[in-house]
Length: 290
Image 1 (cartoon, rainbow, N blue to C red):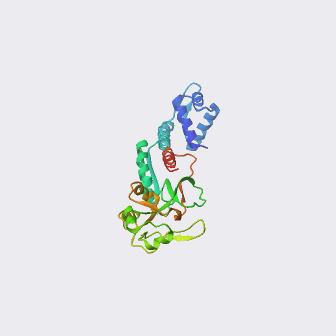
Image 2: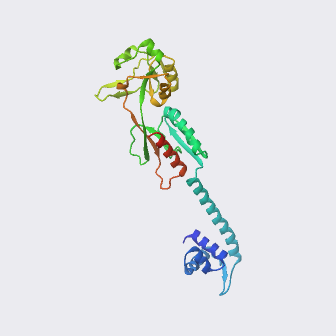
Image 3: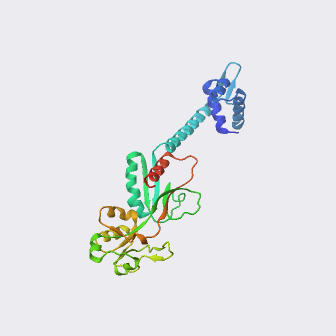
């Protein structure tokens, strides 16, 4: 027995005045209307309708049940409308996780453009290099750098993640420009305290960023500021250095010795009923970061 369906049939019978009109409105037979009313009365242990050949009326129990059932059905319809508006509309909040450098230098500026197109969406951007769990930590989507395991999540490819080696024009004028990897032994290098890159070139040779350095920090922005100030050479993500390169504050060198680019993906849960606001953001970021 479908209690909710029986309740809907009962309310429709009351409001239309008879079984026949109720059956037309509900697109079921009059026999089925009568059957569901009887099932409801049996469940409640009380008659709800008094009927004769010409007229029907509510019993005292029926009047009470009708008022409560009408309220319940209205609440259900309002709940469905609210969910439909949320899922198909462009309102509500989205939580995003992104790597620190890419999130601050690339994603945040793009979100400013996104807000101009979709001003009613709220976004919470959490920057972390840690791998987050979409479900346990309540994220709608995350951006991940590196090869992905088979997780059953939706993964949309974005622009590959590259690291660059740079120095300022003033530094190169003072110290010279390195042409080969061994030249780094003669240069002043800057290092990230939480990241010591090691990689292989196409010929199998293993390279690593020098462990001897004149300045280190746990923050890429601090390293970039030092590099722009002429302190030494920096190796950091392209996203962090690109603007300074375009502005002439930094110059890229040793391009033949860089680590291989890493794949980047936009990750989110599979959903047979995709939310419009999430779809709008996914499509926007994928289009901007192909």
